[in-house]
Length: 265
Image (cartoon, rainbow, N blue to C red; front, side, top):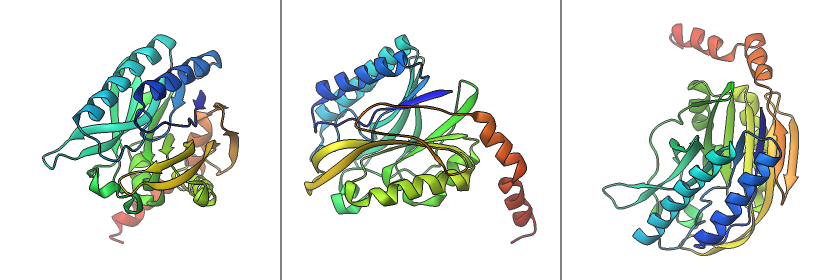
């Protein structure tokens, strides 16, 4: 399956501009023959300092608009945006898959990045990422900081995922960590990993931390090899589902882990 990722330079709070960028990325991905496109974390709004009902509503409208636009282009889209508000009046940071006009919730970000005060704005997710079939494979994903926590990716793989899409706003200062972790999760999960990390410079969150982002997209094979990389432009790469399946047959990590648990270890 051909996949794409658009490491956009998002504009904080500017939903019309970010939506226009996302729609253009869908069209470019479709022209390249991609069936799935990844967008960065919080693509409709980025991290607005004090999000209220208006920001949440405009974000939701952007997601709904892009779902229809992507369906018309024949491209599925994975990204994140504001999710539902709970009793604490805090929304989640929700990973969504837009497929055929439908909006599927894959995961609510579990680990909130305290240096930028995410924990003061969002509520953390409590459930493992879910899996969704697409083309001939199965896709799931995670959001930015969750990449550092192996149990989140393990939950996605346990659901049957063969491709993990990681959407992020991961700063240049820790770019080396980003690639190592993408490759590590691919090896651990014996799966493909597609990372989409925004570009540009922004003051992030309530603490207005000024961060520079690399605008990088990366596709990693189940062997931990970077097969495709792009900087500040659309990544287009190929996912071979059989490669992951064959590796899982040759080195049956899941079965061996089950045997160990069965011994009570």
